[in-house]
Image: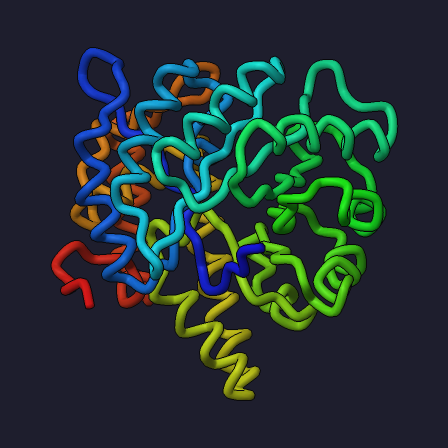
Length: 310
């Protein structure tokens, strides 16, 4: 069993000029996240365009990130794939590379007909290695939408390495039930940055998100304010986070916009390129996004590469 706490970033994937994956940026990326209060990385997920990458590229990124695994910086490798044998191979590779855990999104072409079938599928992937296993619940992308409390009740004991769920969905009642299940034995990682205060109200201890890449200090302060009983300040910071999320969402390409902001944070991620069919913003659009961040209070909370790693 592994208990994850704090904020865990879902890293973006950088590409070189020739279109190949750039693993050389990972050491600086890991230092940036650590310096700004991030407790780990969930690699090759949605934000990292994992499902658009080749298995070879995913393996290279997994190995590069696992080189920075530490007790205070947990590395979780997403191994979900429409072919389960590929998922199993990536699970074994994650274990060999030194990951702390693996995660898996539900298969999204041929989808499980019921929650029992989903749990059985997850058990088979989890059995490919001895790492703690997280189910990655994101029905907005997979169209696999069963109550996760039902998943936990069936999977508890049936998947020996089950550590929890990466919960990227808006069903807060179901989320709260999962957090409380088994006296809180499982890590139910909250995955909606724009609803983080709601996750805290439901008992959240750990969270995985995309915007922790760019404004992690804001979320660290938000969590501290909430736990200190400063609810008005927590709500104010949540509203500011929503402002930043809106700036990137309205750009026309959330991922490309976030890469532009990361560049401004001091981390070069190419030219904001995204893999098709996602859109890459032109240079003017990227500059507009950065200007909106820099001209608002968001600039106070942006990750900065010149911070020292404690």
